Image (tube, rainbow, N blue to C red; front, top):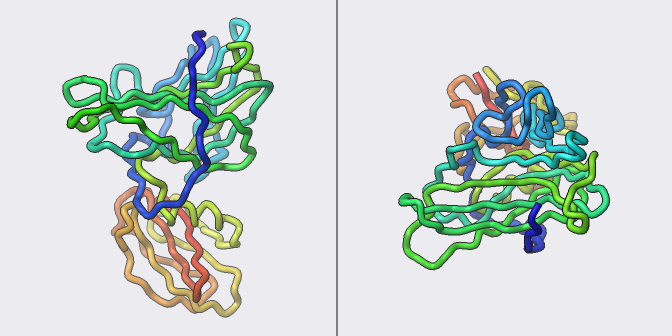
Length: 278
């Protein structure tokens, strides 16, 4: 495997612009056999499956896991855009974002590469980066996209992510990554808030939700202002004050997708990510 010169990533910063979930099956809820719908892998049926479905999800029920296997000495996971079909995008987004875990062995790193093209197929930008640090809990990351000079906007994007040992130019069997919730653009303040407040003891009874978004808070006599917004920040359920520890919000009129449940009490805001799926 050819050595690649990579740039070290910075940790995530909070920005008020919204990330856009433009990738198909961005949260890896849908699978056909051993493959995540809309994505491609280097799995070889009957021989080796370095890319697998994981129930260790950041949101929803599933995530994608890539493990270095021992097939043919070693096989590093390769995961990315669907073979022969690049992801369609509609503007020059500043960053590629996702949540990850990384079980790092020896000198292994996660290699992240991407190429962006214009509508006519000319190169418009690229990503050439690596994740060097192990992460035992879900960690948000923003990877800057470098754009080439020119006026034409990017219209399609190919992504390839794998594991590589930076010294031996191979990878260590047992190293693995887990990814969830891919997006483009900056992470939102809501997304960071949701990730940081997962231990605030808000219990969601059905996620994905169907007819109701049902949740409870630990306070015996709560006085919370409840609202629901979609991934663009638009409020989709009228705000109301809940004085009950358990609350049910009808979701029959909501389209399938990801929403954020906001629970405000004074200056304390708790945010939970909710998936609606009828």
